[in-house]
Length: 421
Ligand SMILES: *Cc1c(COP(=O)(O)O)cnc(C)c1O
Image 1 (spheres, protein in one colour):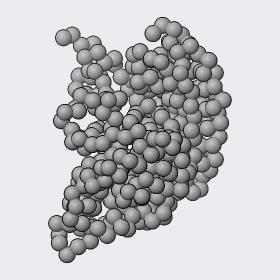
Image 2 (cartoon, rainbow, N blue to C red):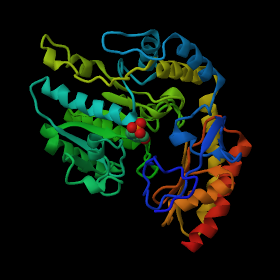
Image 3 (cartoon, rainbow, N blue to C red):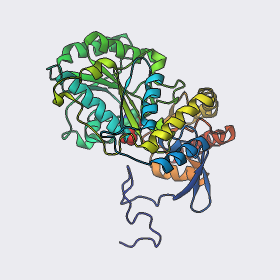
C-alpha cells in the first residue's frame, strides 16, 4: 500500500487506535506549562495534561532541577537488595500524606501494575491465612488498567476490553450503592459471596476512563462500611483521582475512608516519568510476615522505585506543599462550571458535570472521536474525546485565559459537530 512520503506510522503502533484508518498523529517537539508545541510550529493548549498526569504543568523548574540533580548522581539502580534516598524519602512522605495508616509502600512502574500488585496482595493476604478467596468485586463503568488481570475488573460490557470476556478470570460485577436500596443489594452480595471474595476495588468519587462518572462521598462510605461489616478488603484505585484532581489531595479523604490497599500512579511524578505505588495498611502487611519464605510478596518489577522517577515524585510533593495547588483546583472547578454551563443547552448534550479539576460533557453520541480531536487541534486545543464524552482535566497551574479558550472551544464546536453526526 502506498504510504505518504512522510509517514509517521511506518513503525509505530499507537494506543487505542485502528491503525488501518489512523490519521497521521501530531508530532510534539516540546512542552511548557499548559502548552504542547507541534513540529509545524503550532502550539496546543493542553486540556487533559497528558492523561491527567502533568498536574503542575509541563517542565516545572522545580521538578526539572530535581531530575537533573538525580540524573548526575544515579539515574537507576536495582531495588533488589538495594534501596536509595529518593525511595526512602518518598515512601515516608506517601505514608504520611495518604489517609490513615497506609504505611507500607510497594513501588512499581505503572498504574496497571500497581493494580495487579494490589490484587495479588489481596489474594495472598487470604492465602497466607490458609483461605482461598480468589474473586474481586468491581463496579459498573470501572476502569483499572489494560493488563490481563486489570481487564478482568474493568466493566465487562462498557469497556474497550469486552472482546476478552471469555479469556479473563471471572470476577463479580456490582452496582455502586448510590442509595439505600442499592446499598442493601451490595451488602447482600458481599454477605452471600464473601467466602470467595478477596477484595472490592473502587475508583473513589470519579470513574475516569469508564466515562468520567461521579459518585458522592456517601457512596464511597457505604462501600467501605459494607466491606468492613462483611470482612472483605477494600482496594482504592486513586490512580486517576489522587494528587488533588477531585479537590482534596486524595479522594478518599472526602468520605473519611482509609482503604486497606491504595493504588497511586499518573500524577505521582507530576507527569515527568512513569512511577506508581501500592500502599498497604499494617494488617495487610503483617499477613505476609512469616518464617516461611513462600509467604513473602513475590513481585519485583525490574525498574521499580526508579531513582529518577522517585526524585520527580518528591519534587512533585514539594510543589503540593509550597504552591497553592488545592486552591488552584477549587478555582478551576468554578471556572469549569461557568465555562461549560452553556453546553447544557446544546441539542445532543445529555449532561455537563464538574468535580475538582475535572469537567465532562456527556453527549447522546459523539461519532468519530478522532476527527473531533482533529477539529479541536485545528483551533489550537488539545482535547481527546472518547466514547460519548468530551472532557477537560487540565494542569492545576493552567492560566485562566487558557482554560477559557478550552471551555469556549468546546461550547462553540459541539453545536455544529452534534448536529452533523
Ligand atoms: C490510568 C489508570 C490505570 C492504569 O494506569 P497505567 O499507568 O496506564 O497502567 C489504572 N486505574 C485507573 C483508575 C487509571 O486511571
